[in-house]
Amino acid sequence: MTDIEIARNTKLEKIEDIAKKVGILEEDLELYGKYKAKISNNVFEKNTDKPDGKLILVTAMTPTPLGEGKTTISIAIADGLQKIGKKSILALREPSLGPVFGIKGGATGGGKVQIAPMEEINLHFTGDIHAITSANNLLSSIIDNHIYFGNELKFKKVTWKRCVDLNDRQLRKVQTGLSGEKKIVPREDGFDISVASEIMAILCLAENLQDLKQRLENIIVGYDEEDNPIYAKQLNAAGAMTVLLKDAIKPNLVQTLEHTPAIVHGGPFANIAHGCNSVIATKTALKLADYVVTEAGFGADLGAEKFLDIKCRKTGLKPDAVVIVATVKAIKYHGGMENVYRHIDNIKNKFGLNVIVALNKYENDSEEDIKEIRQNLEDRQVQLSLVEGWAKGGEGATDIAQKLVELVNEEESFKYIYEDADSIKSKILKVATKIYGAKSVNYSQEAIEEIEKIEKMGYGKLPICIAKTQYSFSDDAKNLECKEDFDISVREVALKSGAGFIVVLAGKIMTMPGLPKVPAAETIDIDENGEIVGIF
Image (cartoon, rainbow, N blue to C red; front, side):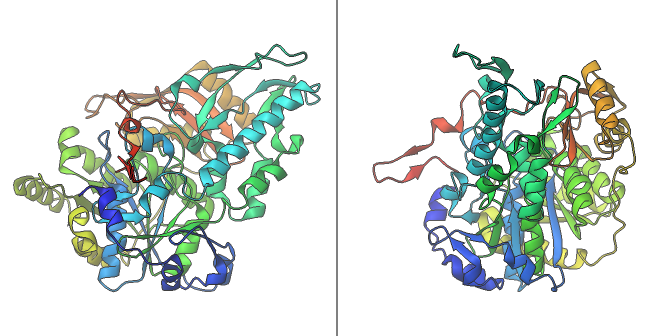
């Protein structure tokens, strides 16, 4: 059966009953049908006196184009913990329509380990990403309206882009204001995908509604004739944007096919954004369960690095164990075990965290390959667990669940890769050399000037968010094995003062992806019975 057929043939529990498992009262739920609900932000406040559960971060080796199953493994682990009698909860990101209609066709797990209702989660869900898109584009329209009516703030350069939650390379650069109306000012603009919008990052890093509003006020939208920054608060835009986001900031509660509670909230990509679910969702989950399983996007050089250097730094969170997902397919694709070893070394020795490797088993994996991988990791004193969640559900993840229950209690010596006080270039160099294994960093003249401006404005102590390809430790997607010395090339640097970090664009990475030659959208359809087909 396909993933969608497995999901449809599984009887779900009412969302009120799922909430009860982790102590959420009906009065703190806003129902979106039978199987989805928003969780009131009061839930965290009601449980502040409770001790936090153990936080398990799921990341991965460098992926192949179709990914290695981090979400599948995350769900399997949460179900596996439940199978062995532990109170567990998932804290995951929301799927974006970009990859759903692009290369992936869905992002809710697979086989017997899925979150549900899968079609709804993969499509419009509870409307969070639409709300982010609307808030982002409201700010754009307010900027251009201000310029149209006289430009009192004396905009010389607008840096704020519009966004849409689809892959559309044609929109990366556009000309706007071409109607020819009197007083309208044509200008060059562009679109990011919604999950790369600063609004998404702000929503995911905000602690509460007031913090959200303050961060929105602090967005830099452009520069005036004297090169001074212009903030969203100067346009009186933050209040209306907050209104659009007042429901989106509330975490979403769903369930796995085995009825494990799952909080799914926020969805920044890790290659072009910071790759973590919301702080509110993670902190709430930690108060509700003994074990929280969360995931950071793409390989550990991207999602895990940003989870640790940005999200943990900003919030005081710390994983008690890190799971690195690997597959036989990806190990061969990247030329052997070296890629896995480097990710292990980064998490274990550079960040000082407890590590276990989850081998996501596929039907055609040979016993010989699995045995060799296991032996290679044992030789390095690293635990391996063969996870068969896709085929067996939580039962196929009881081994890793048992191992994690022990691992989360082992001593750690967590540390960041760079310090707040480091210069921007020093931060970039430390991530590039320590995590990516680069020899050095090259900068475009534009990037150098942007860095100097950001430091002069007093924002130099912010963490960095490097946007680069997910398919290589380098910034070249075709350099799979990274055997030769390589440099990281920084072409652009952008201050995200509302989110509280600095985006560094490396190589050819774009913040608006394009569709593949044959997008998943071509196979997604609705049949004569009104049932969706093609989402997997």
